[in-house]
Length: 281
Length: 281
Image (cartoon, rainbow over all chains, first blue to last red; front, side, top):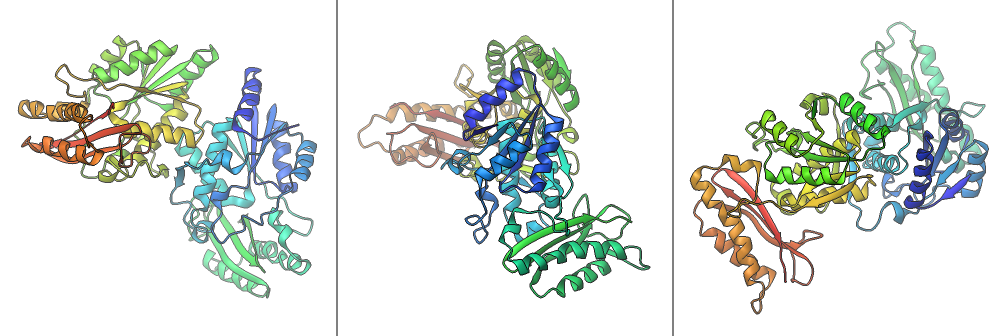
Protein backbone atom coordinates (compact mmCIF):
# COMPACT_ATOMS: atom_id res chain seq x y z
CA UNK A 1 0.00 0.00 0.00
CA UNK A 2 1.20 3.47 -0.93
CA UNK A 3 0.50 6.77 0.87
CA UNK A 4 0.54 9.87 -1.33
CA UNK A 5 0.06 13.47 -0.31
CA UNK A 6 -0.16 15.50 -3.51
CA UNK A 7 -2.73 15.74 -6.29
CA UNK A 8 0.01 15.43 -8.89
CA UNK A 9 1.27 12.16 -7.42
CA UNK A 10 -2.13 10.49 -7.01
CA UNK A 11 -3.00 11.48 -10.59
CA UNK A 12 0.21 9.92 -11.86
CA UNK A 13 -0.44 6.61 -10.06
CA UNK A 14 -4.11 6.49 -11.17
CA UNK A 15 -3.21 7.32 -14.75
CA UNK A 16 -0.85 4.37 -14.86
CA UNK A 17 -3.54 2.06 -13.41
CA UNK A 18 -6.02 3.36 -16.01
CA UNK A 19 -3.48 2.77 -18.77
CA UNK A 20 -3.43 -0.87 -17.67
CA UNK A 21 -7.23 -0.98 -17.98
CA UNK A 22 -7.80 -1.24 -14.21
CA UNK A 23 -11.02 -0.11 -12.53
CA UNK A 24 -10.76 2.27 -9.58
CA UNK A 25 -12.84 2.50 -6.39
CA UNK A 26 -12.73 5.47 -4.02
CA UNK A 27 -13.61 5.57 -0.32
CA UNK A 28 -13.65 9.24 0.78
CA UNK A 29 -13.06 9.55 4.56
CA UNK A 30 -11.91 11.90 7.30
CA UNK A 31 -9.82 9.08 8.79
CA UNK A 32 -9.79 7.63 12.34
CA UNK A 33 -11.10 4.42 10.92
CA UNK A 34 -13.59 2.03 12.50
CA UNK A 35 -15.23 -1.11 11.19
CA UNK A 36 -17.71 0.99 9.18
CA UNK A 37 -14.88 2.43 7.11
CA UNK A 38 -13.28 -1.02 6.77
CA UNK A 39 -16.54 -2.45 5.40
CA UNK A 40 -16.52 0.22 2.66
CA UNK A 41 -12.90 -0.58 1.80
CA UNK A 42 -13.54 -4.31 1.56
CA UNK A 43 -16.56 -3.76 -0.69
CA UNK A 44 -14.50 -1.40 -2.86
CA UNK A 45 -11.77 -4.04 -3.10
CA UNK A 46 -14.22 -6.70 -4.20
CA UNK A 47 -15.73 -4.39 -6.89
CA UNK A 48 -12.56 -2.75 -8.29
CA UNK A 49 -8.96 -3.52 -9.27
CA UNK A 50 -7.52 -0.53 -7.41
CA UNK A 51 -8.88 0.97 -4.18
CA UNK A 52 -8.06 4.53 -3.12
CA UNK A 53 -8.97 5.78 0.35
CA UNK A 54 -8.78 9.52 0.88
CA UNK A 55 -8.10 10.74 4.41
CA UNK A 56 -8.81 14.44 4.67
CA UNK A 57 -10.41 16.30 7.56
CA UNK A 58 -12.17 18.81 5.33
CA UNK A 59 -12.16 22.22 7.06
CA UNK A 60 -14.90 23.77 4.89
CA UNK A 61 -17.53 21.31 6.14
CA UNK A 62 -17.01 22.36 9.78
CA UNK A 63 -18.77 25.37 11.26
CA UNK A 64 -16.80 27.92 13.33
CA UNK A 65 -17.97 26.42 16.66
CA UNK A 66 -17.53 22.79 15.59
CA UNK A 67 -14.87 20.18 16.37
CA UNK A 68 -12.44 20.67 13.45
CA UNK A 69 -9.40 21.14 15.69
CA UNK A 70 -10.12 18.27 18.05
CA UNK A 71 -11.37 15.85 15.36
CA UNK A 72 -9.47 12.60 16.07
CA UNK A 73 -6.53 11.75 13.79
CA UNK A 74 -4.18 8.74 13.69
CA UNK A 75 -2.61 8.12 10.28
CA UNK A 76 -0.44 5.17 11.39
CA UNK A 77 -3.39 3.28 12.79
CA UNK A 78 -5.51 4.18 9.73
CA UNK A 79 -2.78 2.97 7.36
CA UNK A 80 -2.68 -0.37 9.16
CA UNK A 81 -6.48 -0.84 8.95
CA UNK A 82 -6.56 0.21 5.28
CA UNK A 83 -3.72 -2.14 4.43
CA UNK A 84 -5.55 -5.04 6.14
CA UNK A 85 -8.69 -4.20 4.12
CA UNK A 86 -6.81 -4.49 0.84
CA UNK A 87 -6.49 -0.77 0.05
CA UNK A 88 -3.88 0.10 -2.60
CA UNK A 89 -3.51 3.83 -2.10
CA UNK A 90 -4.11 6.33 0.68
CA UNK A 91 -4.51 9.91 -0.51
CA UNK A 92 -3.76 12.20 2.44
CA UNK A 93 -3.38 15.80 1.21
CA UNK A 94 -2.61 18.89 3.27
CA UNK A 95 -5.32 21.55 3.55
CA UNK A 96 -3.22 23.93 1.40
CA UNK A 97 -3.05 21.28 -1.33
CA UNK A 98 -6.84 21.09 -1.52
CA UNK A 99 -7.61 24.76 -0.80
CA UNK A 100 -4.86 27.14 -1.96
CA UNK A 101 -5.16 30.70 -0.65
CA UNK A 102 -7.00 31.95 -3.77
CA UNK A 103 -9.59 29.13 -3.59
CA UNK A 104 -13.11 30.38 -4.41
CA UNK A 105 -15.40 27.67 -5.83
CA UNK A 106 -18.21 25.82 -4.05
CA UNK A 107 -20.92 23.34 -4.98
CA UNK A 108 -24.40 24.13 -3.69
CA UNK A 109 -26.97 21.37 -3.62
CA UNK A 110 -30.30 23.02 -2.78
CA UNK A 111 -33.48 21.68 -1.12
CA UNK A 112 -32.23 18.32 0.16
CA UNK A 113 -29.53 20.12 2.17
CA UNK A 114 -32.08 22.25 4.08
CA UNK A 115 -33.66 19.91 6.67
CA UNK A 116 -32.04 17.69 9.36
CA UNK A 117 -28.27 18.27 9.68
CA UNK A 118 -28.46 21.07 7.11
CA UNK A 119 -30.68 23.13 9.42
CA UNK A 120 -28.22 23.06 12.33
CA UNK A 121 -24.99 22.99 10.33
CA UNK A 122 -25.24 25.80 7.74
CA UNK A 123 -22.64 25.38 5.00
CA UNK A 124 -21.84 21.81 6.06
CA UNK A 125 -23.16 20.09 2.95
CA UNK A 126 -21.70 22.80 0.72
CA UNK A 127 -18.32 21.79 2.15
CA UNK A 128 -19.09 18.08 1.74
CA UNK A 129 -20.31 18.38 -1.87
CA UNK A 130 -17.33 20.55 -2.81
CA UNK A 131 -14.66 18.26 -1.38
CA UNK A 132 -16.30 15.12 -2.77
CA UNK A 133 -16.49 16.63 -6.26
CA UNK A 134 -12.81 17.62 -5.99
CA UNK A 135 -11.88 14.08 -4.92
CA UNK A 136 -13.91 12.64 -7.82
CA UNK A 137 -12.10 14.93 -10.27
CA UNK A 138 -8.70 14.07 -8.80
CA UNK A 139 -9.14 10.28 -8.55
CA UNK A 140 -11.74 9.79 -11.35
CA UNK A 141 -13.03 6.57 -9.79
CA UNK A 142 -15.51 4.20 -11.41
CA UNK A 143 -17.26 3.76 -8.05
CA UNK A 144 -17.32 5.63 -4.75
CA UNK A 145 -18.52 4.25 -1.40
CA UNK A 146 -20.55 6.08 1.23
CA UNK A 147 -22.02 4.80 4.50
CA UNK A 148 -25.74 5.14 5.24
CA UNK A 149 -25.12 6.49 8.75
CA UNK A 150 -24.64 9.85 7.06
CA UNK A 151 -27.87 9.31 5.16
CA UNK A 152 -28.42 12.94 4.22
CA UNK A 153 -24.82 13.19 3.01
CA UNK A 154 -25.41 10.14 0.79
CA UNK A 155 -28.54 11.77 -0.66
CA UNK A 156 -26.69 15.06 -1.26
CA UNK A 157 -23.88 13.25 -3.10
CA UNK A 158 -26.38 11.25 -5.18
CA UNK A 159 -28.22 14.48 -6.08
CA UNK A 160 -24.96 16.24 -7.02
CA UNK A 161 -23.76 13.32 -9.14
CA UNK A 162 -27.08 13.11 -11.00
CA UNK A 163 -27.39 16.88 -11.49
CA UNK A 164 -23.81 17.56 -12.59
CA UNK A 165 -23.59 14.38 -14.73
CA UNK A 166 -20.58 13.20 -12.73
CA UNK A 167 -19.44 9.90 -14.28
CA UNK A 168 -19.08 8.05 -10.94
CA UNK A 169 -21.30 5.28 -9.61
CA UNK A 170 -22.28 5.86 -5.97
CA UNK A 171 -22.43 2.72 -3.79
CA UNK A 172 -24.38 3.13 -0.51
CA UNK A 173 -23.23 0.85 2.33
CA UNK A 174 -25.20 -0.25 5.42
CA UNK A 175 -24.57 1.20 8.89
CA UNK A 176 -22.11 -0.88 10.92
CA UNK A 177 -22.90 -1.11 14.65
CA UNK A 178 -21.09 -2.12 17.84
CA UNK A 179 -22.36 -5.41 19.35
CA UNK A 180 -24.65 -3.40 21.68
CA UNK A 181 -26.16 -1.44 18.76
CA UNK A 182 -24.27 1.89 18.86
CA UNK A 183 -23.62 3.05 15.29
CA UNK A 184 -19.89 3.19 14.65
CA UNK A 185 -18.51 6.73 14.41
CA UNK A 186 -15.10 8.34 14.75
CA UNK A 187 -16.77 10.72 17.21
CA UNK A 188 -17.58 7.82 19.59
CA UNK A 189 -13.97 8.31 20.74
CA UNK A 190 -15.12 11.51 22.48
CA UNK A 191 -17.51 9.61 24.81
CA UNK A 192 -16.74 8.94 28.51
CA UNK A 193 -17.75 5.53 29.90
CA UNK A 194 -21.05 6.91 31.19
CA UNK A 195 -21.75 8.75 27.94
CA UNK A 196 -20.92 5.62 25.94
CA UNK A 197 -23.67 3.87 27.84
CA UNK A 198 -26.13 6.76 27.48
CA UNK A 199 -25.42 6.87 23.72
CA UNK A 200 -27.31 3.60 23.32
CA UNK A 201 -30.51 5.64 23.55
CA UNK A 202 -30.24 6.48 19.82
CA UNK A 203 -30.24 2.89 18.64
CA UNK A 204 -32.89 1.89 21.20
CA UNK A 205 -35.14 4.73 20.01
CA UNK A 206 -34.87 3.42 16.43
CA UNK A 207 -35.82 -0.08 17.62
CA UNK A 208 -38.70 1.26 19.69
CA UNK A 209 -40.05 3.22 16.70
CA UNK A 210 -39.87 0.16 14.48
CA UNK A 211 -41.74 -1.87 17.09
CA UNK A 212 -44.71 0.54 17.27
CA UNK A 213 -45.16 1.21 13.53
CA UNK A 214 -47.97 -1.38 13.32
CA UNK A 215 -50.05 0.16 16.11
CA UNK A 216 -53.48 1.41 15.05
CA UNK A 217 -53.56 5.11 14.19
CA UNK A 218 -49.75 5.31 14.26
CA UNK A 219 -48.66 8.31 12.20
CA UNK A 220 -45.22 9.78 11.54
CA UNK A 221 -46.18 12.70 13.77
CA UNK A 222 -47.23 10.48 16.70
CA UNK A 223 -44.18 8.30 16.25
CA UNK A 224 -41.88 11.34 16.36
CA UNK A 225 -43.50 12.42 19.65
CA UNK A 226 -42.95 8.93 21.10
CA UNK A 227 -39.32 8.91 19.94
CA UNK A 228 -38.65 12.33 21.50
CA UNK A 229 -40.25 11.22 24.78
CA UNK A 230 -38.13 8.07 24.73
CA UNK A 231 -34.87 9.92 24.18
CA UNK A 232 -35.93 12.62 26.67
CA UNK A 233 -35.81 10.05 29.48
CA UNK A 234 -32.03 9.83 29.08
CA UNK A 235 -30.76 12.74 31.23
CA UNK A 236 -27.48 13.38 29.34
CA UNK A 237 -29.20 13.33 25.92
CA UNK A 238 -30.18 16.54 24.17
CA UNK A 239 -32.17 16.15 20.96
CA UNK A 240 -31.11 18.26 17.99
CA UNK A 241 -33.65 16.57 15.76
CA UNK A 242 -35.72 13.38 15.75
CA UNK A 243 -37.70 13.33 12.54
CA UNK A 244 -39.60 10.94 10.32
CA UNK A 245 -39.03 11.98 6.73
CA UNK A 246 -39.60 10.85 3.18
CA UNK A 247 -36.48 8.78 2.40
CA UNK A 248 -36.08 10.38 -1.05
CA UNK A 249 -36.77 14.06 -0.39
CA UNK A 250 -36.08 14.23 3.39
CA UNK A 251 -39.18 16.37 3.91
CA UNK A 252 -41.42 15.38 6.86
CA UNK A 253 -43.37 12.21 6.03
CA UNK A 254 -47.16 12.45 6.14
CA UNK A 255 -47.73 8.72 6.17
CA UNK A 256 -45.82 5.46 6.05
CA UNK A 257 -47.02 4.79 2.49
CA UNK A 258 -43.72 5.78 0.91
CA UNK A 259 -40.24 4.80 2.14
CA UNK A 260 -39.73 6.66 5.39
CA UNK A 261 -36.60 7.33 7.38
CA UNK A 262 -36.34 7.96 11.12
CA UNK A 263 -33.35 10.27 11.51
CA UNK A 264 -31.77 11.31 14.81
CA UNK A 265 -29.17 13.85 15.86
CA UNK A 266 -28.61 13.81 19.61
CA UNK A 267 -25.99 15.38 21.82
CA UNK A 268 -24.63 13.09 24.53
CA UNK A 269 -22.76 15.54 26.75
CA UNK A 270 -20.74 17.58 24.27
CA UNK A 271 -20.69 14.89 21.58
CA UNK A 272 -23.10 15.13 18.67
CA UNK A 273 -24.16 11.69 17.41
CA UNK A 274 -26.38 10.80 14.47
CA UNK A 275 -28.20 7.60 13.57
CA UNK A 276 -31.09 6.57 11.35
CA UNK A 277 -33.14 3.68 10.07
CA UNK A 278 -35.41 3.04 7.12
CA UNK A 279 -38.71 2.07 8.76
CA UNK A 280 -40.19 -1.25 7.64
CA UNK A 281 -43.98 -1.38 7.42
CA UNK B 1 -20.86 15.31 -38.86
CA UNK B 2 -23.36 13.90 -36.40
CA UNK B 3 -25.99 15.80 -34.38
CA UNK B 4 -26.98 14.19 -31.07
CA UNK B 5 -29.56 15.36 -28.56
CA UNK B 6 -29.21 13.13 -25.51
CA UNK B 7 -26.53 12.73 -22.85
CA UNK B 8 -26.66 8.97 -23.26
CA UNK B 9 -25.95 9.17 -26.99
CA UNK B 10 -23.09 11.67 -26.79
CA UNK B 11 -21.51 9.56 -24.03
CA UNK B 12 -21.73 6.46 -26.20
CA UNK B 13 -20.05 8.16 -29.17
CA UNK B 14 -17.32 9.74 -27.02
CA UNK B 15 -16.65 6.46 -25.22
CA UNK B 16 -16.02 4.77 -28.55
CA UNK B 17 -13.65 7.57 -29.63
CA UNK B 18 -11.82 7.24 -26.30
CA UNK B 19 -11.55 3.49 -26.76
CA UNK B 20 -9.74 4.20 -30.02
CA UNK B 21 -7.32 6.45 -28.14
CA UNK B 22 -8.64 9.65 -29.72
CA UNK B 23 -8.33 13.07 -28.05
CA UNK B 24 -11.47 15.19 -27.68
CA UNK B 25 -11.94 18.96 -27.91
CA UNK B 26 -15.11 20.76 -26.79
CA UNK B 27 -16.44 24.13 -27.93
CA UNK B 28 -19.36 25.08 -25.63
CA UNK B 29 -21.72 27.55 -27.34
CA UNK B 30 -25.26 28.91 -27.34
CA UNK B 31 -25.37 28.59 -31.14
CA UNK B 32 -26.14 31.21 -33.83
CA UNK B 33 -22.57 30.95 -35.00
CA UNK B 34 -20.32 33.69 -36.28
CA UNK B 35 -16.68 33.73 -37.29
CA UNK B 36 -15.65 33.88 -33.61
CA UNK B 37 -17.25 30.49 -33.00
CA UNK B 38 -15.75 29.11 -36.22
CA UNK B 39 -12.26 30.18 -35.11
CA UNK B 40 -12.69 28.15 -31.90
CA UNK B 41 -13.86 25.11 -33.87
CA UNK B 42 -10.91 25.27 -36.27
CA UNK B 43 -8.43 25.58 -33.40
CA UNK B 44 -10.13 22.64 -31.66
CA UNK B 45 -9.87 20.60 -34.85
CA UNK B 46 -6.17 21.30 -35.18
CA UNK B 47 -5.53 20.33 -31.52
CA UNK B 48 -7.76 17.22 -31.20
CA UNK B 49 -8.86 14.10 -33.07
CA UNK B 50 -12.55 14.65 -32.34
CA UNK B 51 -14.31 18.01 -31.97
CA UNK B 52 -17.63 18.35 -30.14
CA UNK B 53 -19.60 21.59 -30.31
CA UNK B 54 -22.40 21.95 -27.81
CA UNK B 55 -25.31 24.21 -28.80
CA UNK B 56 -27.45 24.95 -25.76
CA UNK B 57 -29.14 28.23 -24.86
CA UNK B 58 -28.68 27.77 -21.14
CA UNK B 59 -31.75 29.14 -19.33
CA UNK B 60 -30.13 29.34 -15.88
CA UNK B 61 -27.60 31.95 -17.00
CA UNK B 62 -30.35 34.38 -18.08
CA UNK B 63 -32.02 36.73 -15.60
CA UNK B 64 -35.83 37.05 -15.58
CA UNK B 65 -35.76 40.31 -17.60
CA UNK B 66 -33.12 39.14 -20.08
CA UNK B 67 -33.33 37.91 -23.68
CA UNK B 68 -33.67 34.12 -23.19
CA UNK B 69 -36.82 33.82 -25.30
CA UNK B 70 -35.67 36.00 -28.16
CA UNK B 71 -32.06 34.74 -28.18
CA UNK B 72 -31.36 33.95 -31.88
CA UNK B 73 -31.43 30.29 -32.93
CA UNK B 74 -30.76 28.60 -36.29
CA UNK B 75 -29.63 24.97 -36.01
CA UNK B 76 -29.49 24.32 -39.78
CA UNK B 77 -27.21 27.27 -40.41
CA UNK B 78 -25.11 26.36 -37.35
CA UNK B 79 -24.74 22.75 -38.53
CA UNK B 80 -23.47 23.96 -41.89
CA UNK B 81 -20.87 26.29 -40.33
CA UNK B 82 -19.74 23.61 -37.88
CA UNK B 83 -19.42 21.05 -40.64
CA UNK B 84 -17.29 23.47 -42.70
CA UNK B 85 -15.05 24.03 -39.66
CA UNK B 86 -14.37 20.30 -39.31
CA UNK B 87 -16.60 19.60 -36.32
CA UNK B 88 -17.40 15.90 -35.75
CA UNK B 89 -20.31 16.13 -33.33
CA UNK B 90 -22.94 18.68 -32.39
CA UNK B 91 -24.47 18.14 -28.95
CA UNK B 92 -27.83 19.91 -28.90
CA UNK B 93 -29.81 18.82 -25.82
CA UNK B 94 -33.28 19.95 -24.76
CA UNK B 95 -33.59 21.99 -21.57
CA UNK B 96 -35.33 19.05 -19.83
CA UNK B 97 -32.37 16.81 -20.72
CA UNK B 98 -29.95 19.15 -18.94
CA UNK B 99 -32.25 20.29 -16.12
CA UNK B 100 -34.86 17.68 -15.15
CA UNK B 101 -37.63 18.94 -12.88
CA UNK B 102 -35.87 17.82 -9.69
CA UNK B 103 -32.62 19.59 -10.64
CA UNK B 104 -30.99 21.29 -7.63
CA UNK B 105 -27.20 21.66 -7.94
CA UNK B 106 -25.24 24.81 -8.77
CA UNK B 107 -21.58 25.82 -8.92
CA UNK B 108 -20.69 29.09 -7.21
CA UNK B 109 -17.43 30.77 -8.08
CA UNK B 110 -16.98 33.61 -5.60
CA UNK B 111 -15.08 36.93 -5.81
CA UNK B 112 -14.21 37.01 -9.52
CA UNK B 113 -17.93 36.80 -10.35
CA UNK B 114 -18.76 39.95 -8.36
CA UNK B 115 -17.57 42.90 -10.52
CA UNK B 116 -18.37 43.81 -14.16
CA UNK B 117 -21.09 41.58 -15.69
CA UNK B 118 -21.56 39.84 -12.33
CA UNK B 119 -22.75 43.08 -10.74
CA UNK B 120 -25.53 43.67 -13.28
CA UNK B 121 -26.40 40.04 -14.02
CA UNK B 122 -26.83 38.32 -10.61
CA UNK B 123 -26.74 34.53 -10.97
CA UNK B 124 -25.39 34.73 -14.53
CA UNK B 125 -21.99 33.20 -13.79
CA UNK B 126 -23.54 30.62 -11.47
CA UNK B 127 -25.51 29.46 -14.50
CA UNK B 128 -22.45 29.57 -16.74
CA UNK B 129 -20.19 27.65 -14.33
CA UNK B 130 -22.89 25.04 -13.72
CA UNK B 131 -23.62 24.31 -17.37
CA UNK B 132 -19.95 24.27 -18.34
CA UNK B 133 -19.14 21.79 -15.55
CA UNK B 134 -22.05 19.61 -16.71
CA UNK B 135 -20.79 19.73 -20.31
CA UNK B 136 -17.28 18.83 -19.12
CA UNK B 137 -18.65 15.85 -17.18
CA UNK B 138 -20.75 14.71 -20.13
CA UNK B 139 -18.13 15.09 -22.88
CA UNK B 140 -14.96 14.69 -20.76
CA UNK B 141 -12.85 16.62 -23.27
CA UNK B 142 -9.08 16.98 -23.13
CA UNK B 143 -9.39 20.64 -24.10
CA UNK B 144 -12.18 23.22 -24.12
CA UNK B 145 -12.20 26.49 -26.06
CA UNK B 146 -13.50 29.87 -24.87
CA UNK B 147 -13.38 33.25 -26.58
CA UNK B 148 -11.81 36.27 -24.85
CA UNK B 149 -14.75 38.53 -25.69
CA UNK B 150 -16.42 37.03 -22.64
CA UNK B 151 -13.26 37.69 -20.65
CA UNK B 152 -14.87 37.43 -17.22
CA UNK B 153 -16.53 34.16 -18.24
CA UNK B 154 -13.12 32.81 -19.27
CA UNK B 155 -11.67 33.80 -15.88
CA UNK B 156 -14.61 32.21 -14.04
CA UNK B 157 -14.16 28.94 -15.94
CA UNK B 158 -10.40 28.96 -15.33
CA UNK B 159 -10.99 29.57 -11.60
CA UNK B 160 -13.59 26.76 -11.42
CA UNK B 161 -11.36 24.30 -13.27
CA UNK B 162 -8.39 25.07 -11.01
CA UNK B 163 -10.44 24.98 -7.79
CA UNK B 164 -12.44 21.83 -8.52
CA UNK B 165 -9.45 20.00 -10.08
CA UNK B 166 -11.39 19.51 -13.31
CA UNK B 167 -9.15 17.51 -15.67
CA UNK B 168 -9.76 19.75 -18.71
CA UNK B 169 -7.29 22.15 -20.32
CA UNK B 170 -8.86 25.57 -21.02
CA UNK B 171 -7.77 27.23 -24.27
CA UNK B 172 -8.49 30.99 -24.49
CA UNK B 173 -9.04 32.32 -28.01
CA UNK B 174 -8.68 35.93 -29.28
CA UNK B 175 -11.65 38.16 -30.02
CA UNK B 176 -12.71 38.04 -33.68
CA UNK B 177 -13.90 41.36 -35.12
CA UNK B 178 -15.82 42.54 -38.16
CA UNK B 179 -13.66 44.44 -40.69
CA UNK B 180 -14.77 47.73 -39.08
CA UNK B 181 -13.78 46.58 -35.60
CA UNK B 182 -17.10 45.50 -34.05
CA UNK B 183 -16.52 42.40 -31.91
CA UNK B 184 -18.47 39.46 -33.32
CA UNK B 185 -21.47 38.47 -31.22
CA UNK B 186 -24.67 36.54 -31.80
CA UNK B 187 -26.44 39.55 -30.28
CA UNK B 188 -25.22 41.81 -33.14
CA UNK B 189 -28.21 40.33 -35.02
CA UNK B 190 -30.47 42.48 -32.82
CA UNK B 191 -28.97 45.74 -34.13
CA UNK B 192 -30.74 48.00 -36.63
CA UNK B 193 -28.59 49.64 -39.33
CA UNK B 194 -28.20 52.81 -37.27
CA UNK B 195 -27.44 50.85 -34.12
CA UNK B 196 -24.91 48.74 -36.00
CA UNK B 197 -23.07 51.93 -36.83
CA UNK B 198 -23.37 53.33 -33.30
CA UNK B 199 -22.04 50.02 -31.90
CA UNK B 200 -18.61 50.88 -33.28
CA UNK B 201 -18.20 53.21 -30.30
CA UNK B 202 -17.11 50.23 -28.14
CA UNK B 203 -14.19 49.27 -30.32
CA UNK B 204 -13.24 52.90 -30.93
CA UNK B 205 -13.22 53.55 -27.19
CA UNK B 206 -10.79 50.64 -26.72
CA UNK B 207 -8.51 52.08 -29.43
CA UNK B 208 -8.73 55.56 -27.94
CA UNK B 209 -7.79 54.23 -24.49
CA UNK B 210 -4.81 52.37 -25.89
CA UNK B 211 -3.65 55.52 -27.69
CA UNK B 212 -3.59 57.66 -24.52
CA UNK B 213 -1.96 55.16 -22.14
CA UNK B 214 1.47 56.77 -22.63
CA UNK B 215 0.30 60.30 -21.71
CA UNK B 216 1.99 61.79 -18.67
CA UNK B 217 0.07 61.26 -15.42
CA UNK B 218 -2.32 58.84 -17.15
CA UNK B 219 -3.92 56.62 -14.49
CA UNK B 220 -6.58 53.91 -14.77
CA UNK B 221 -9.00 56.29 -13.07
CA UNK B 222 -8.34 59.14 -15.55
CA UNK B 223 -8.49 56.74 -18.47
CA UNK B 224 -11.86 55.40 -17.32
CA UNK B 225 -13.22 58.97 -17.17
CA UNK B 226 -11.96 59.62 -20.72
CA UNK B 227 -13.51 56.35 -21.98
CA UNK B 228 -16.87 57.17 -20.42
CA UNK B 229 -16.81 60.67 -21.93
CA UNK B 230 -15.95 59.18 -25.32
CA UNK B 231 -18.79 56.66 -25.25
CA UNK B 232 -21.13 59.30 -23.80
CA UNK B 233 -20.87 61.26 -27.04
CA UNK B 234 -22.74 58.48 -28.86
CA UNK B 235 -26.43 59.33 -28.22
CA UNK B 236 -27.84 55.79 -28.48
CA UNK B 237 -25.16 54.34 -26.18
CA UNK B 238 -25.84 53.73 -22.51
CA UNK B 239 -22.87 52.62 -20.42
CA UNK B 240 -23.44 49.72 -18.03
CA UNK B 241 -19.78 49.67 -17.07
CA UNK B 242 -16.48 50.93 -18.48
CA UNK B 243 -13.74 49.81 -16.13
CA UNK B 244 -10.03 49.32 -16.04
CA UNK B 245 -9.28 46.28 -13.93
CA UNK B 246 -6.49 43.93 -12.94
CA UNK B 247 -6.59 41.25 -15.67
CA UNK B 248 -6.19 38.42 -13.12
CA UNK B 249 -8.53 39.45 -10.29
CA UNK B 250 -10.86 41.87 -12.19
CA UNK B 251 -10.71 44.35 -9.29
CA UNK B 252 -10.17 48.01 -10.26
CA UNK B 253 -6.57 48.58 -11.35
CA UNK B 254 -4.58 51.17 -9.38
CA UNK B 255 -1.84 51.48 -11.96
CA UNK B 256 -0.75 50.05 -15.29
CA UNK B 257 2.14 48.13 -13.63
CA UNK B 258 0.32 44.80 -13.77
CA UNK B 259 -1.66 43.41 -16.73
CA UNK B 260 -4.76 45.58 -17.02
CA UNK B 261 -7.97 45.06 -18.90
CA UNK B 262 -10.34 47.70 -20.20
CA UNK B 263 -13.78 46.09 -20.08
CA UNK B 264 -16.96 47.57 -21.52
CA UNK B 265 -20.65 46.73 -21.33
CA UNK B 266 -22.75 49.19 -23.30
CA UNK B 267 -26.37 49.17 -24.35
CA UNK B 268 -26.98 50.29 -27.94
CA UNK B 269 -30.72 50.79 -27.98
CA UNK B 270 -32.04 47.65 -26.30
CA UNK B 271 -29.03 45.52 -27.19
CA UNK B 272 -26.35 44.91 -24.56
CA UNK B 273 -22.89 44.55 -26.07
CA UNK B 274 -19.59 43.78 -24.36
CA UNK B 275 -16.02 44.20 -25.51
CA UNK B 276 -12.58 44.41 -23.90
CA UNK B 277 -8.89 44.71 -24.52
CA UNK B 278 -5.72 43.97 -22.61
CA UNK B 279 -3.96 47.35 -22.47
CA UNK B 280 -0.41 47.40 -23.77
CA UNK B 281 1.94 49.73 -21.93
